[in-house]
Image (cartoon, rainbow, N blue to C red; front, side, top):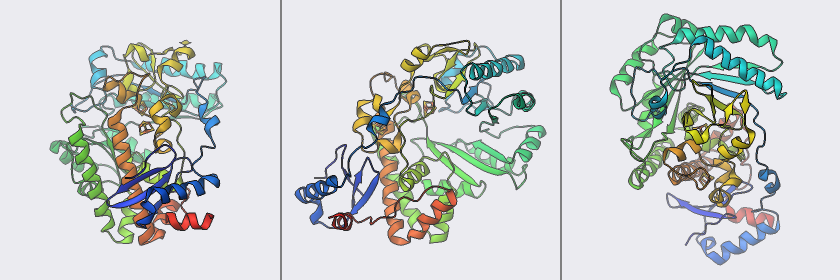
Amino acid sequence: MLVSDKEMFVFSQNGENFVLDPNSQLFWRITSELILDSDVLENNYSKLLNYGFFKNHNQTKEKKLFSQFDLSNLVINPSTKCNLDCWFCYSNQYKNYNSNELNLKEIKSIIQKALDFKIRNKSNSPLSISMFFASEITIDFNIFLEVWEYIEDIKVDYNFPIYMFLPPTNLMDFSNDFVEFIDKYGYLAVSLNFLNEKQRKTVVQNLNRFENTVEKHCILPLNAHMTSFFDIYTQLLNHFDCVSMRPVRIPHDSRYPWTQDSLELFSKNMQTLVFNLLDLNDEELLQMLLSLGSSDYFVRYLDRIISRAKYTERCPAGKRAAAVNPDFRLYPCSGFIEIEEYSFGTFDDLNNADLNKVISSNLNSKPECKECPIRFYCGGPCEDWKSKLNISKFESVNHIECTINLIYFKNSIFLISKLYEKNPEILTNYAKEKGIEYMLSYPLNFEDFVLFFS
Ligand code: SF4
Ligand code: SF4
């Protein structure tokens, strides 16, 4: 029987056994049969405990909940217009409410209010502004261009940097202005519904309209109906520089909901992906890993495991990020727009007390997260997904998301340990190319590690 608790997490993946110290984020392989005996395991655990492992040395720091909203990411959703109707679209619920559209004057006024808010609060953190997360940017691209020029004009007047970001496009239909802008900007993010064959074909044709120098990133909402992940990645990498797959956040009544069965299928697909990757030669494997995009969930876990980075919050929603709806009210992120209990006022009348109640996705605010062995890799639940599943914001985590996280975590650990065995240079070169710290320079064999410290 494998042991699993918040201090020592013992688990198996593809017939191999691993131990994780959730606090230091060191993990080891258990290679000997003997060491799986619970007394031997307990004994080794006690030895390492004496040397300071398996203890949370940062507990006091993590207790700190945010108290002041420091705006650094503003999302403005001027409309919900789109030329596709994807069943999983994050903005579907928003579309039911959004009867108004923001005109250019109103968008500028929101930006001005946000800037005044930062000045009033003596905030010098950079401000990034994103638009059209609930609609298709190419439809009203002239508005985007005008806002872009407006920001270029005013940003010199502020002593903090101001950036503007483009949302992903579905790349179905766009003007030459869009092509010219992207060719200069040098980066294009495309959101692709892989199950929509028409979109797949159109996107592939339309990519040819951009310069080769443009970095092309495909963002693929991963749903419960998709299989053969390796084939999907390799197919898309024929056309894109990088690909990010990320699980869709959907309610139970969606077309392909996440269920016990679909999670099992997802787990099998992830296992197959890992074995497909391991079949590549070292150079191909490194190249493929480097082609996984910045918002890919598999890469999120691979990078966090390699760098042993500690995440104590899930995202900046409601702490440093806000989304504005057409009546100027603020919400933690676009997914909450028009859900009254998540509104926290306006820039003229922002209520920090409400904000603290609105979103509290820090690890320490959820009992399940405090006990969770992969807590520092995850950072806590996505409150938007919980709300889609009708889970109370105060009570619990979303077990669909937790299961998906655990599947990513275990597959990443397995892949990393196999790469370590095959050729550790793949991992060190990967970390170097990505600019992340390589923090796995220790014996990965648990017995050797314990012997060394004893
Ligand atoms: S959200 Fe789930 S997976 Fe993430 S830390 Fe909390 S319990 Fe763990
Ligand atoms: S709450 Fe969820 S959807 Fe919103 S920003 Fe955070 S992780 Fe993203």
